[in-house]
Length: 127
Image (cartoon, rainbow, N blue to C red; front, side, top):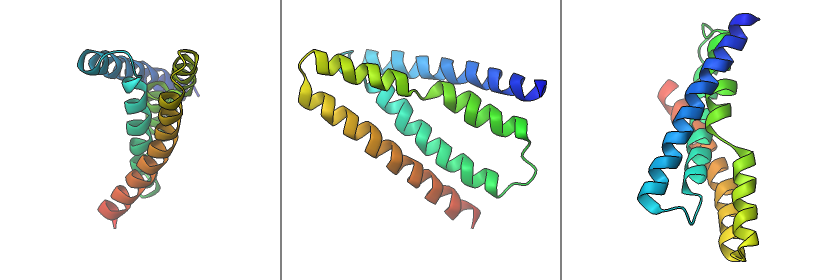
């Protein structure tokens, strides 16, 4: 039990730092008027989740700790629904209704498509 908790905690720390890096880099590249960092981590995280789920399904030797490290730990901290919600509310309250709606649709649709892309890529690689 403790080793699973340690795996989640260490994966979470790394995921949070990676997310921070994406947020800082995206704001330096494209500014802070649009939540590019959150959009990027949620789409990329969904793609990685798709890759991992298929990879783990083909690997009996992956420990529960490794699975927890990557999915609950790393990806749980790397991606974020709460920040997505806050970003949407901020855009909405600034009366940027079309941008807010576009952001919401892009976040949900592109993240789901990225998950399916990750599943397809890993299935092709493991076939």
